[in-house]
Length: 207
Image (cartoon, rainbow, N blue to C red; front, top):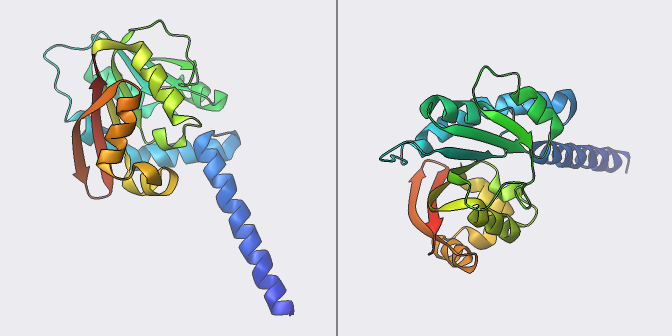
C-alpha cells in the first residue's frame, strides 16, 4: 500500500507539472515563462522560416501582424525579411511583450488578444500565426477577427506541429474539416504543406 501511495503521488506531481507547463506555453509568466519562450523559439524558428518560404509576394506587404509572438523572435525575423513593411507582434502575456521589446528590431510589440483586437478593419496585408492557434480560447471568434483585420487581398499563414493539432484540435486534424471550418468564417484554405511533423496552411478571404 505504501508503494502504491508513492506511485500515486508521483503521478499527481507529474500531472500537475504537465498542466503548469501547458499553462506556461499558453500564457508565460515569471522566469519559467522566459526560459520556455527561449526554448520554443530555438525549436520553432526553423519552422517559421520553412513557412515563409511559401509566401512570395510580388511586392512587400505594407503591414504585417504576427500573433502569439512569445519573446518576439519570429516577429523580428519578419521585420528582417520585409524591411519596407510595418510589422506588429501581439501577445496576451505582459512578460512576453517585455522580453520582445528587448530585441534589436524595427517591429512593434503590443498586448492584444486576437479574439478582440484594437486594430481597424482591413489593416494587415499579411497575418502570421506560428505554433499558436491551437491555444486560442475561442478559435471561431479569433478567425472572425483575423478576417476583419485582413485586407481583401491579404494572406494568412498558419504553421505548427501537427501533434498539437491532433491533441488540442482533433476535430480539425483532417484537412477537409479545417477547410469547412474556415468557410464558416468567410475564409478559404488555398495551400497546405507538410514536412516531418509540421503543418502549414495558407489562407485568404472568401470575397
